[in-house]
Image 1 (cartoon, rainbow, N blue to C red):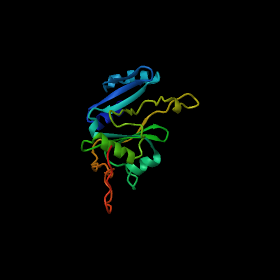
Image 2: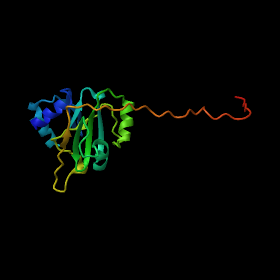
Image 3: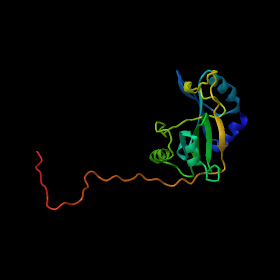
Image 4: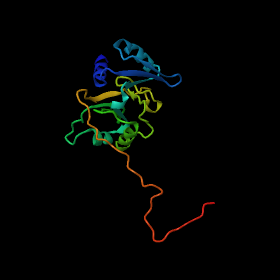
Amino acid sequence: MEKLFQKMARYFLNLWQLGVLDPQKGLWTVKPALEKIAYLRSQNARGCHILIKPLCIDHYLLADDIDRQTLLRHHCFPSGQWKPARMIVETSPENFQVWVHSSRALSLEEKRMWLERMRSDPAAHPKNRWGRCPGFRNTKEKHRSPTGRFPLARLIWIDWDSQADIPLLVPESKPSLLSHPSRRGSVCRAIA
């Protein structure tokens, strides 16, 4: 677990936090320190979700609820090598979250457009987004096995040495409701 924490600290440039989400009590933050691991494990064993989030959220994008096919299409080169600046976490069997570390700040609107393009969970709003922490169990009831165990969130790939050069996306302009092709003649209506 210590090595996982060290890898995540490097990925998030030592600017990250942990969250404990209790379904009844809500969310509270925890400093990402090695001495907190036992506490986090005990909270996870009680059914709490252990989450992670970078502190400079505008340089990170989190794609959530990605299946294997979508993961490979958007985050892997045809050669089979992972694209740079990614942290890939398998949150439950064949379900993934992907963090992308951008070389530039991304607006919320731009994040929404990229997440839509990457087929991320549409309900996962990019503002203030938490991801699942690898090394802890996903305690969502729907993932409980017949033996009563929850799946372990696993770190699949991490590249802390790179930043992604994400192309700038601009919203497609929609035609104005007032614009129309010119007509012959004119129409004049009185406004009452």
